[in-house]
Structures are given as structure tokens and as C-alpha cells.
Image: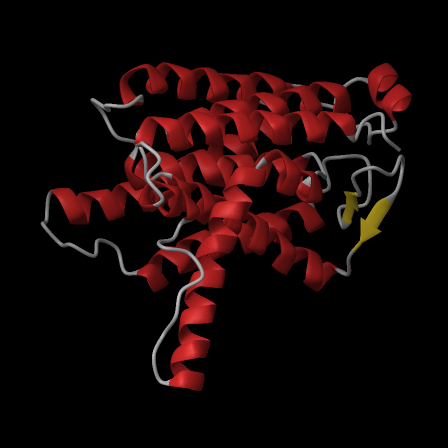
Length: 277
């Protein structure tokens, strides 16, 4: 339903982040600019949407619960409560973080597409739970009137990712580019925000989190050791971490399939939060 606030916000996020990614891809492919869109401009675009979304939700609550509440995994009917400014910034972090995390993961044929299919389907099931009074009460999840519409959106994303994966599986015939990765990652983050499941997203998208952390650790440690010892040292052979395993001798297909398996395990862990409370 296009008159549903959840669906509208999710679609807008998909289009906004996709536009940022398209501009980046256009500059690289058509204009021949190796760097594409300057990273700072890309971050401004992502944060602008995240902060605008947080502000909109403060002024236009759609969930029936205080906007600044968010569910805490493994605890029934327990919420973390933020102040208004912190919530708005937190929304920016989630949107930008999820968008960039998927972008970082999109480094091997089929890797990001498969993981997006898994994560989106998982989020879709949580949206179904949140949108039903009986199921949400039984499982101790926030009841969010109208959130069930996100089930269709999330499963559509999952289906689209699977359809894309048919041609993106190694050896890939087509590539996602920033247009796809930023859009899908941003939509995943926005769905989590709308479902008050921002912390749950860390579990659902566990592989994306690990990929991002590997880059942060690698860069941080390199800069520290260069300052401390005069020469930079690395924790991983290469970051993001999927390249580390390639350097260890794993084939691209092996890395991708094993990361998919880990993605499924994270999804199962996310589902366990509904009963382990």
C-alpha cells in the first residue's frame, strides 16, 4: 500500500540512497573519474537523509509508541530510551552505517546480493510479527500498527536480490555497483528504524557489521602503529575481511558461500531473540 507511512519512507530511502550511488557510478563509468563521488559528499547525502528521517519521526510518530524508544534484543517489552537529539543522531548513524556496510561488503561476486536476500527476508518476518497484535503480544515484540506492510517491501527486496544473484553469482555477468549497494543497505537500515529494531539489525546484518569492523580496525591499527613505530602494521592481510580470506588461499566462491552460511546463522540468532527472553 502506497498510502502506508512505513512503505513510503522505505521507498524514499531506497530512491534517495540509490540516487547517491547512481551519481557515484555515473562519475566513475561515464565520466571516467576513478574516485567517483567524493566520500565527504556521499556521507553528507547519507547523513542528510538519516537526520531528516529522525526529525520527521519525532514530529510525526507513526508507531503508536514514543519515537525515541527502540527494542532491546533478548528482553521482552524492554526498550532503550533516547533523548530527542540523540535519537536523531542515532538515526543518522544507522542509515549511514547500514548503507556503507553493504557497500563495503560488495567486493566479491554474489556476496552482498546473497546476504541482502537473507537479511531482508529476516527483517520481513519481524515486520510481520510487529504488524499483528496477537503475534507481537505472544512474542513480546512491539506492536506497530501498519508495520506489516513492510513485510511486502522487505520480501520484495529479498526477491529482487535473489533475482539479481542469478546473474551476479560467480562468475558475475552484472554488478550491483554503488547504486544497488547503497540503496539496499540504506533501505535495510530504515526498515530497522521503523520497526524499532536498530539493535536487532546488528545481529541480522552480522556479516555486514564484521566487514565494517574489519575496515575500521585495519585502518585504525595501521595509523596507530605508523604513529607509534614509524611504519604501519596490519591486523588483516587485506580489508574488508572477505579479501583477508582470499589472501589465505580461499577461492572466491568458497568465501562467498561460507559468508552466506554465516549470514544464515546470524538470521537464526536474530529469530532466537523472540523466544530467548
